[in-house]
Image 1 (cartoon, rainbow, N blue to C red):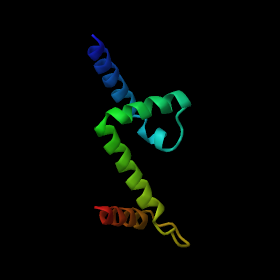
Image 2 (image 1 turned 60 degrees about the vertical axis):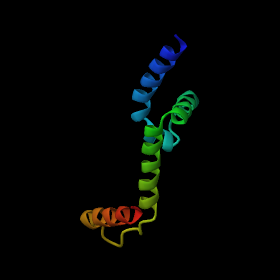
Image 3 (image 1 turned 90 degrees about the vertical axis):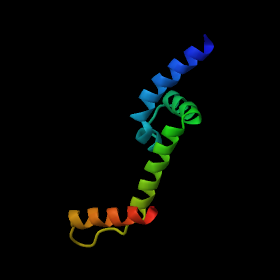
Image 4 (image 1 turned 180 degrees about the horizontal axis):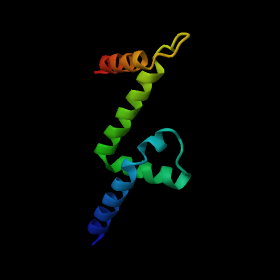
Length: 88
């Protein structure tokens, strides 16, 4: 019976966690939510990979040079794509 309850908790937490990984990464979860996320991340390789992917994206974005005088959205997007390609 205990295994069934743990399995149900895992599925419930997995559905909850997938939509909140970014909030966790940004430090926007309340302490109880943060603890729930950390417990789930300890159990779920899929969510750990998602978190790692988001961290890599943010790291790549933080390494981008700031835009010059005028903001060129297409140029920024192309730069992001190029830098992310360097991470592979």
